[in-house]
Length: 121
Image (cartoon, rainbow, N blue to C red; front, side):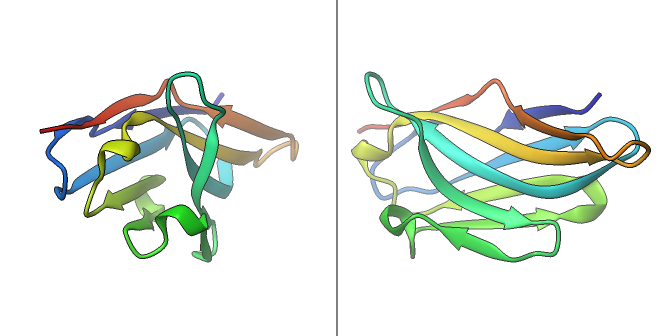
């Protein structure tokens, strides 16, 4: 089974930067894509950015130019570099991935536990 674990959240001042990490671990799987979402209290979970196994990326308009998603395929890890953070970026940030079992081709759509990002002075 594949597991997804995020790290890197915390408290940052407005205008600051933070980098989140998400590592997928397990046996015999291929990454179809991995993505970042966030959810503020009382709000739906919103898509932020996605990177495919081939390295293609796409972003929500709300974070284009401020957030950058990247991946280290050797480590099955994706990163979200967040710059010029604003108080409205405060949320729990979740990693999501679609993984394919190398033996039977079964797909697994998995979420991490989330990491809190708070932007406040």
